[in-house]
Length: 426
Image (tube, one colour):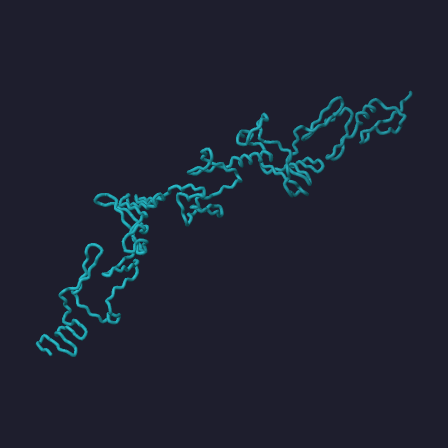
């Protein structure tokens, strides 16, 4: 018998067939099949410990986890990145110095775009710390409709209201506000074309002033103060061009119907009492001569009489106006006597009436006898001083003529005869 010399085929852990002990020996079909089926190649993956032997006929499945996809075509396995990548809250994308994280886009030593809730924050970072804001350039105007047609800020509505604007939009909006400004008006207008309102642009100066200087304006902290001038002129002054001023007046009305009116036309002042009753008008006029009058040498009114303050009242019985004149201290009184000499005295000045030859000392011991002098008025301008023809000097009185005295005792002549009431004489 002829016997075949065989050698067993074995596999190692690497999936390869070991070299047989008798390399030139024959192997059976079973050994060959066993060796082939136990061979293969090792499969390892980063992140997983150990290796795995893939035997002939085993199926290797290529899987893709989060954010990856895998395809097989014509013997090729292709891995791809999902179009929607979700790196979760702890994930990030780093490209050089640029990082995309859950907080936003951060460029080291450059700009960053982060969020706080629904708000975006732009700035620059240095070593992870925000150090300054950044500037965005090339921003298109946000004042556009969906079809690209422009729209003004005042006309913007709908989705346009959610658009961002650039510096040009802000400048145009600001200029629109400046040009629109605000309107001012007053009770009267000096504008051309009968215009009633004047438009003041923002930034322009508005002067609060008075054309006739009767109102004084003062600028203070956040306020304009108005005050009346200490010297008021109503109706306007005569201008340098010779034009006459207008007649002005001041009216003051009380809630009870009383009123005061100062009229510049005739210089009068009108006064009304309660409910308009008891009216009174004051005005200037040529009145009677005063003690200093030009033509008043004789004490009578002259053509150059002083200007008087006169007032008119109504006669209660007839209702007709009655004119009265107001006197002043310069009017005074004029006195004269039998000799015709005029004594002119202003009011509130001293007029001395004294007896001739009576000193101040004599006046202090002077005793008078009543009933001997009478002053009579003639109903005009004359007062007459009269001596009673029947003198009564009382029992203590006397009449002295040089060395002769007439007393209650009788007629006595010094160093001469006397005649007394007891019948005695000498």
